[in-house]
Length: 79
Length: 224
Image 1 (cartoon, each protein chain N blue to C red):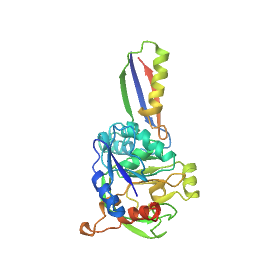
Image 2: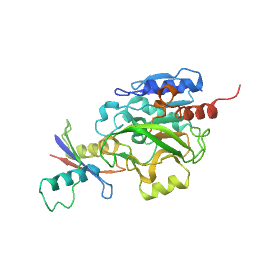
Image 3: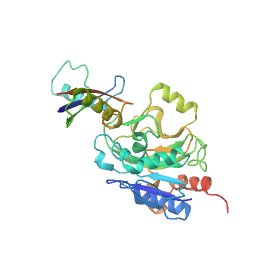
Image 4: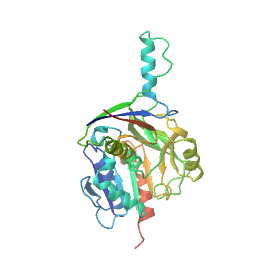
């Protein structure tokens, strides 16, 4: 079973890399970009076949390692 | 004072830290590989060095914080042991939950590598007891992710409990309240981005860093 975890910075946490990307887009002539936030995607290949069990395990993985919940939110998707 | 330095793949300040601790205490520091599940007996201090543990993969310090030895380090700290983390070591301590807040990419996005002046914010810790409150020491920084983040509630708590150990005189990375180092609630765990072990010998341009190790020895060595 394949799964995907999206990790993004929480609202209110300043994202210097996002700001730099926004600035670079502006210098390429892409006007009207009001905000850019950079995150990461983690794709997993799981042996588990039960969707709800997989989701529970993924949540545990996010809490314990994949995300830093002080500054990051995560979104789990079982594909 | 008996000390140990934890070594991860990618640690690169481990030897300097051991030299700093040894010079101050007169006793060699034990090097402990991250795959060990326990610490040597009778330690007073555990030091987590700077570097790029596990290549900074996922988040700086995130993988190192989940290695077997860190369980032992967290137990040691929870029993009242002293733990100092420098630079990547600070990141590891935050990732392991021993210190609050987060360290993000420097506000200027650049790797910052230079000597900085630190202001000692408290002398109420084993690490700063021999320093002067409000006094300045010069210590180098070398990091890309040293931008200390604390939400307003945590920041008020750190300030209220006198847990900011050092502040930058001239903020190099965007850290909130110019914070360069913080203490745990029991004041025995210190995390700091600047590298005291790198300015620990007059031949290298100064030895302000040694004062932190000397404070530790003065605070922790039981008089004979």
